[in-house]
Length: 463
Picture 1 (cartoon, rainbow, N blue to C red):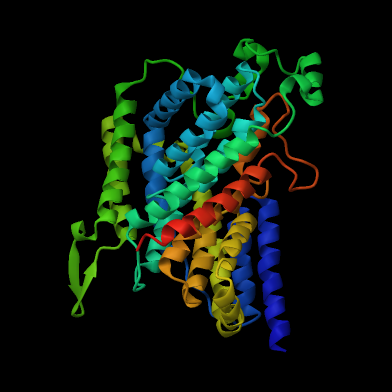
Picture 2: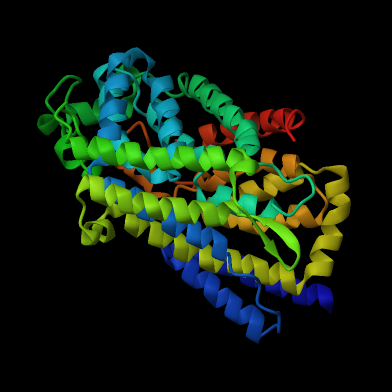
């Protein structure tokens, strides 16, 4: 009877995720909340923990990033990236995803890639390079970047979940494990992707579009080639800055934002710099979650002041909308997963303990699959890391599994994937008829296969 009940509850979880993915956006979180209702009222499960820490971090970081966006800071960063990419156009297959990795890790969100996509497309197409190659790798790199980001919500959630473990790691130690691993994964994926697909001159779909005037030959003006209607504004509401006349306020705003990121990294890397308090006779150190929220909200205010941004402009920034969507999705899905595990703790944990003792790497696959199903890095961390802790896995090992949350690009359901397909007028970047046969699946798998084992190797020397 217990097996039947657990199976039915698992079907509720899977069904809610399926319906949420189909609806998209905030629908993922709303269906997750419906699943919680069913588990609580139909199966009498106690409600699981709400991922409050992760939600607070997303709110704080997105507020700061949105203020920077409103001040023109993201346009300035895109301008810098464009200068680097255009300076070495032959290396666009490698420069584009590497720069994307750095920007997204620094900003704590993959959404910064949107205004970069037209730049990547233009540079590749002007050189006759198949745009699918740098576009797909860059989009996937934006997802894996959060495993190496000191201000990502998923990273804060991981630190918060593992901070009480006897082998807890500092933020700097975690980045030392995940950063080089993800970078290597991106470079290997870029190498593999540089050989994917036919050259444009031999691509029948591109040739058809060229004949029909859907896309102009390389070197044509943007308006003639159709890029005027497929710029980053179509995807994110931002503009690509292509001139050197960047407002000084935009430069200051971006400098303040990344200065705040540096403060978080330094304080998180050296616990001795954090204040301590005595609570009930015990010495308690300020948590990374609290540090992140305080610093990033303060950064948001300073960005508004130096960038001369009105409060309403922050709320109107495209990143604010995407952040709210992420919060709702995380709330519903992570809450649903926590409720299921809480209600069936002995059965779920007991059944997985033997597997973990023989093959601890299975948790990385679990993180990858949960990320794929929920399209949320934070949801995968908040769902699977507590499970790993319960199974007795060490914190360095769990940190090494963080790159697996890049599985969010397994399904072509992310805005950056859809935007890349829309921007690529050659038709080389595509979503196939069979769900998984899209341009992003190969770099997703390559980065995961390379980065997780590399991180596991590095974890042996950290801690």
